[in-house]
Length: 131
Image (cartoon, rainbow, N blue to C red):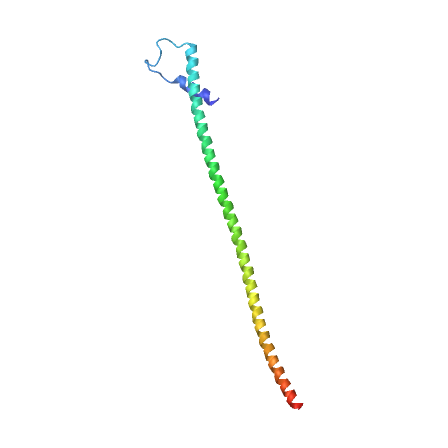
């Protein structure tokens, strides 16, 4: 049974006071009109509820979209942070490698200067002996 029939059945069973009932028994047209009016009222009520539900659905979808956008931004930021961390680690490795190269270069320069000094001393010794 549909909601309409249950509702109509319930409405026809309600007691009416003497002042509510017409002086004579209602004609079939009056009953039909009353049922039509009740159905129309119920229809308007259902339309109103449907409109409210549609508005609520729009609001929920909007909230869901905002939440999805936030989640996307967070995921994007998280990815950017991971990328930045990897880049930072790579740069730190590069800097530490360059520092090691600088130490080696300094040692090589020191060794080179020492060898030049020794070479100059040897040249002086050789030149004194050859005189």
